[in-house]
Image (cartoon, each protein chain N blue to C red):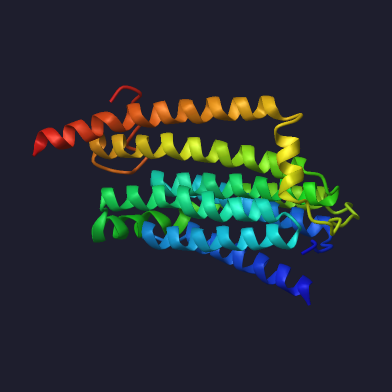
Length: 104
Length: 170
């Protein structure tokens, strides 16, 4: 199946709205799990913009950058969730305002 | 007709993202986030990027979200955790982040106003992606593998002490 011809500014506006939703969530929430989820939303919005740009010029580069964003997201989530487990064990809470000291 | 599918999937993605980031229960938020990722995969497919759509489902909605599910199940926050989360969500906490992100979004939309172009309508096959990935982008593949290795080592180091302590307690 071939792609659709979607106006570029609508796709980019969707990506921008998704990104600012993620930014809002990152600043609003205090639970570290929700902060990680907001980061995922922001990375996903950036990937949407890249894939849309790749579709505009019908080149493979957009999807390759999407692959690299996927790699970054996977590595970030693995380390972040390990940190979540450590924070829960040391501070007995997921509140990021409690985890202020660098050395626990 | 097919364009309607695009706007429908975009609507689903937006609604699911907003719902995911405003839930008090982490498990519910995760399910909404998975719905949002699936909707974005539909967008990728409709824009002519079937390989990216498949990867979005397999890796994002499959692997990464399953990691979140495991951690949420291990933490077992419970009812009081949900009630505390609901208390953090309410009231005046919304004002400053809302204003800041709305301003940034407004600037972005104003900057995007004059972009009179459309996506090309020709799909990019996985073969072209593979050829480009292992041709001009082979250094990026190496860097991505180093990044994944360092992520693996970091996650092992951070999770190891957690596992040891739990076993000693038994």
